[in-house]
Amino acid sequence: MHAVTTVDRASGAGLPVVVLANPSAGRGRHRGLLPSVVHRLTAGGHPVRVLDVWTPAQAEAACHKAVADGAAALVTVGGDGTVHLALQAVAGTPVPIGVVPAGTGNDFAGSTGFPTDPLAATDAVVAALRGGRSHPIDLARITAADGTHRWYGAVLAAGIDAIINERANRMRWPRGPRRYDLAILVELARLRPRRYTLRLDGVTHESDAVLVAVGNCASYGGGMRICPAADPTDGLLDVVVGGRFDRRTLLRVKPRLYPGTHVEHPLVRSFQARTVELAAAGITGYADGERVADLPVTITAVPAAVRLLR
Image 1 (tube, rainbow, N blue to C red):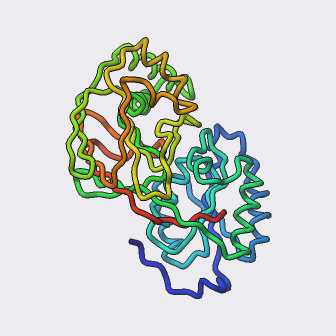
Image 2 (image 1 turned 30 degrees about the horizontal axis):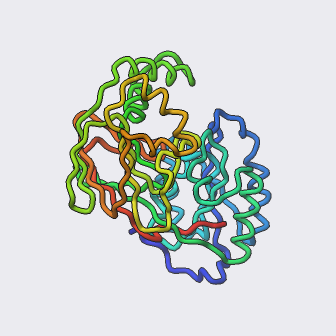
């Protein structure tokens, strides 16, 4: 839990709405959006302050400070990575979060009921601020082997998708989306099932798998419903395991990730649990699209861990 300055949150007099913006989110297509968002937010009855940060570490530290200093709310303008940074500060506190989706995927925003249009989402945040209204949802809390913790809102990927991300992040060429495309080709050529050990609420499952995802929400990767039954208000994590896929089968199944019908494939198994212990050799987990921890990790569903302004 993070310390929050004791303030009169009923009136919220003088408390700022703090904005964390990522102008490069969504490959910069919303670069000119921020002034309009800030202008609209001023109608919410609070002063508005935009954080002046340049790196993810600076952004996360600034969010923690804003919450500790008594922000009325934290509003993100960006994608899932921007939301992920903000969640580290607001989780477990009374400070609510508003999400203006301006990234490539915006899976957290879409899964939790924010409008897809950035300005419509801003108006929804303003209406919630003016009405003093917020809605609690669950978050997932990761504990790494070294005891460190991270929160996430959408999905933890720990299969071929995480392996591709890890390779793309190690590559220095080519730049831009082509680097990720090349990483996909390399890892598909090397595709093999990995041995996973899962303990779901204390019950152990061993599996050779290609896809492993632990969802608080349903989708990741820009609308792929990898955990289609996940509900961020039920106090449970959804675990989806795709078994011994070969390349041809995986490529045939991939389009079914968008509607979520892949879970009907005979090689896919689905589970629900409050606590998930996940282990495999040589795998780094990615949550909300961000690199979080090497396996093994323990993931816990934390009910009503954050309040949403919508």
